[in-house]
Image 1 (spheres, helix red, strand yellow):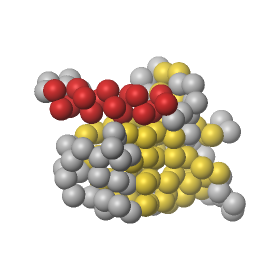
Image 2 (image 1 turned 90 degrees about the horizontal axis):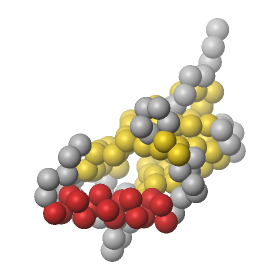
Image 3 (image 1 turned 30 degrees about the vertical axis):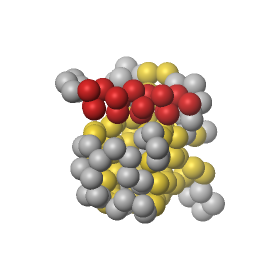
Image 4 (image 1 turned 90 degrees about the vertical axis):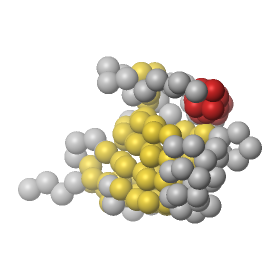
Length: 135
């Protein structure tokens, strides 16, 4: 998506800076998604983040800590990884105080429960990554 105004270019720079500052080394796959990290954070004065974390009774959880960052609409698609489990994540950042949406697509053999959540500013949301029941 092209960034045509100064605010969006600044926001992209802050997302890039914070994601590199708070994550492990990153590599891009053939789909253009970045993998090799377990967290992505964005924002300057406050930061929001999405993290893939190990869970006790299932493979992993996606934890979304939503904080008001810039107030601009922003769409992000990226991949998070822990212990070889790569999960595709899409964040639709709402304008101002509008809630943000988090969509998760796990790899084959896994399911996300739920696969989509709405998280209000100042709140935290969680999606469980479970083994798919195969017959």
